Structures are given as structure tokens and as C-alpha cells.
Length: 241
Figure (tube, rainbow, N blue to C red):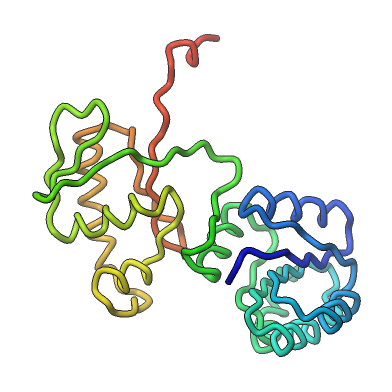
């Protein structure tokens, strides 16, 4: 999927504005707001451009028809539906209509970002809004030794740990899905429930912590994958009150 505009369907102007700000901060996409599913469906029928369709309606009348129309007219579109019910009564209907994912109210920006990344793929320039993260400046040599700025000694990695760390470093701080790791390292699809990478990630975390303290983070992002970044060192003035 290429970088493209977002269609936001929400009755309230405040919710439209909040989602528009989120998508702009998250991936640099502009948003086109609609108050009803019918209006959004008419727009898609007229223009037919692939988009990210975000539906967040208190009363999702016409939402299933909108999803079906979008799926037929713009099959490359990414469709997310927010279920306003407390028991998830609309979730199955929207998935059967063609939605890629369903969120439940309330949800956090972090959850939405993770789900977006999981469904859209690792090629998109997605970042987690509101978090201070910096791309880790680490290098790995031919003998599987990992070094970084101000490191007193190198961290010795196993061949598998090296492969994983190379992918995390190349990601530039963005999420790397388990499926992406499996395809790039093993040339196979990742199977849900397979914890083959989790074991190595745990060992990598310990080695990084032993060598660098809390400076480098390998974060497990629920339902998405892993994110690797550096926490900027604080200056003495940062602790002043």
C-alpha cells in the first residue's frame, strides 16, 4: 500500500479532528472526514481511490454496506472499524463485510498504531505518536559482535541473535512484525502462537541490559511485533526541579 489519504467516518467533529491529528502524526497522511457511512460510500463510488478507511460511529448504520463497497471498489484499501458496543455485537458483521480489523472502545493511540502497522505492513513509515524514541546507533561486525557509542566492550551475539538484531536495527525504530522476521530470516511464514523469536528476544534484552543498562530497548508490541530504539541520555539539567 502506498502512502495515501485517510477517510474518517465519525458523527462528531471532535472525533473527526482527533483521528485526523492521529493519522497525520502517525504516518503523515491527510484525512477526509464524513459524518455518515452513506456520504463516505458515495465518495468512494465516485472516486474509487485506494485509501485507509476508519469507521468510528456511535450508531454504525450503513457501515457494513460502506465496507462492502470499499472492498469491491478499492480492494487495496485498509479498512478499520471501531465497535461501539460493549459486547462486540458488530465485530463479526463488519469482518464478514470485509473489514481488515476491528477495535473496541475504548482504545489507545498505541493500540491503533500497532494494529495499523500489523495490517498495513512494515513498508509504511509509521511511528508511535507522543513517544520520545531515537533510532539506536549500533553496529554488528562479521564476528557477530555488537557495539555502540560509548561501549566499553562488544556484545557477543549468536548467529540467530545477529539476524534478528540486524532486522531491528534496519527498521529505524519502526515495528518489525514476527512474520517479517520469519520471512527474512527463515524464508517461511510465521504461524500464530509460534514463540521461536520470543526466546531469542529475551536473551538479546539481557545482553543489552548487561552491556548498556537501560539505554537500548527491544519492546514487544502486543499483536504486532518488536520495536528497537535508543532512549536519549538525559543531561544533568533534565533532573533539575
